[in-house]
Length: 399
Picture 1: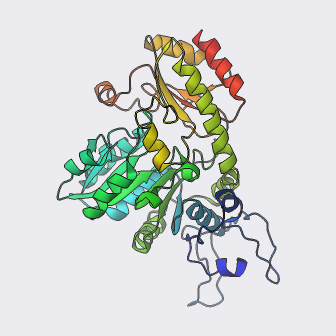
Picture 2: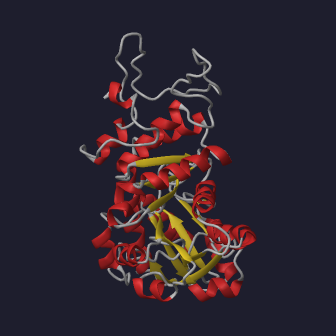
Picture 3: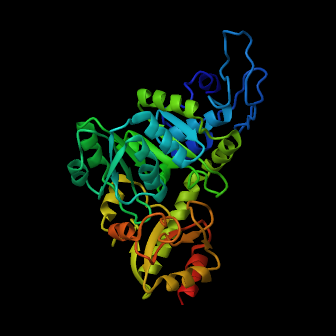
């Protein structure tokens, strides 16, 4: 494997013949046992910014750190292997990955059909940044294929969904929407951050591009900022890799190393995140001060069957509506002792936040309420602590 990996196209992954947890540990980090090699068991942190060549006209495997770096390459191979993708690219943030994707695939006058319930940063990127480039976006309820198809225009080039969405935990029927995009020659982008490749593989369901904020579950320890794009098309990869290098929003060697380390335990962490989220969801669903719990793992979720059909798990994020007012929600959040009141998600520690005043504060109140984000909707990311401690903390704060 070491000899073969030396000639693999940068960012590409071997065929997924091994189990997920095995690939998470070994893919991209095969020990080099050739004469004179160090035989590192884990990918080393290569900090060099430039690489020597023997002849002027004959560059080596690496030339300059922005173009490619051995540590980042190991991560890109691992990410591709886990997502069942041919190619992976790592970026300095999730939004940097999204920006590169949009720059590589769209031009002025192009149109995107997007899920109406998206991460606030993605909507801000669409509405405040790419509007200046003449890109138009229509938002629809993309839980099914019909609203997406009805929103298509002659200028539509891309369909963009999250599944599950942030923060309302809605699902897109990825297979059905993929049939629409293939029939119309469109690019289907799926943000897979909430479920990670452990629970869901959108490329296998027909997506063209998978987006990740690796800051979340993939990194998993709230100590690294990064993003990723995963594709199967060589044509898409070449365009993206060119922009990755030309625009320069690449992941640093040290952040690549931290992400590689986090990925090794992804399978274990996702199982525990889900176990804790289910316990919390069942507790909250019965609590008199909670009016609604949104979690695909609950039978009460309107898309529970779809969740079981297109994913192998439900993830560690849930949202719920607290009865009362904003001050009631603030009082509840500030009384918590084990949960940390903070934005973001997917870390080993349990995080909780109020979207209307934190992650989605950039959205107008009317726009939030139109898609179902109430003033007292609370989003929770279950960590890997003891479930009993998490439930007890919620119980005392609700009291």
